[in-house]
Amino acid sequence: MSKIKSITVENYKAFRGKHIIPINNLTLIFGYNNTGKSALLRAFPLLSSSFRKTSSYFTPSYLDYSCKSLRGGLHENILFNGENRLGFGVDWEEGSCINFSLQQIGDQPERMTDLTLKSKSLIKQYVRSLEEENKLENKSEPNEVIDFYNFRCPEEFLGLDKLISNFSNSLHWVSSVRAFPPRYFNIGLGVPLYLSPDGQGIGPILWNLAENKSKSINRINMWLNSVCGRELDFSAIHNSKNGLRTVGLETIMTAPTIIKEDENDFSPTRIAILDSGEGIAQALPVVMLCAMAAEGELGEFPVVTIEQPELHLHPQATVELANFLVKCSKDNPSASYIFETHSESFLKAIQLAIIKKEFSKDDFSCIWIKKTQYTSELKKIDIDDNGYLSNDWPNNVFKETIHQSKKIIQSRLEI
Image 1 (cartoon, rainbow, N blue to C red):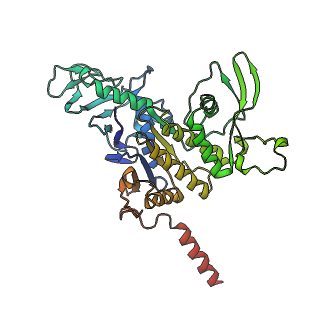
Image 2: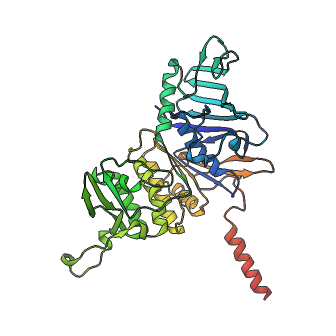
Image 3: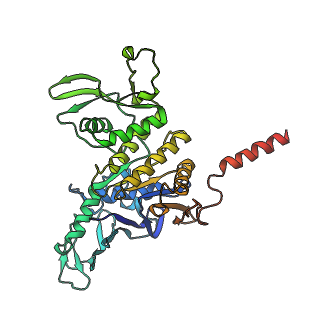
């Protein structure tokens, strides 16, 4: 098995032509609003969901158009305006890759027009069969015809097939629109352990981690303590019946922060995560997934994709979150963390970690999404050992505070 090296999109959303997204241990995606950076990150869960798609639909398709990252969009909604071919690809560090192009017209099924499969030294290219509908034929050996609707590779590509399957099952995505955590919920028989993109399902997963004495809980508590001096508490059970327990998601003060005259009379006050501040509640799914990835609890090569990890957090708490994520990345180099963010504090925390030799620049990738008159472009931003960003980083980014301060001073002088 192997880590993913890059994702390729072609004529996807705002991106005309082919664009390669390099993936590192920790990858940050920046850009102004309406440039396509969120769409770029959402291509990851789209591919993951499509690779493991098993449901049948009225009109056959290769992509999973029920995937939540599409927000109800169909082929024409994600195809760059004026183009007729939509392309995707995944490359792995060990040399394997899959690249394919799709077309869809009117109410017809989605067609794959070309496919490239590579597993180390073995490479095969397929094109749409003219004789057998919905099938592909080998470009060099037309007698070899395959059906690829479920993304299942021919037998000689067994290794690539396993990589595709691993990617589809190891991709985790948290969206920018998140639900508030529940005050009370059930754990026990019939309760699934699944985190939805909006963060729903976090309660049962945290309780399961705690009852199995997962080290992830220690990591989560370290972050909670750094931002609010509290830690998760799993002692309160409100009801138990028929194999189910009704519990809550609560915190108590961390022991060193407790001030009391008589330790024997002290009873810690439990506060629901729901009442602990919007930033804490919104960041908890992010922290939990990253902690689990760091501890190897999301598979061998997990890919964690997060939109706006800093959502509702104060800049100081954002710095603590960035420091936490840097440590998670260092502790499990097999994991890939990909974040779409607007936060200057997040970036500066990583720059500082690189300067202080707490994180290697070779394990970090920074991407800037630039919008031109007709399309969006992807720029990889280099960073040196002193934390300086390359010249491809736009000069005016994160200068808004300085500009506003100058305007305030100028306005005062004009009074």
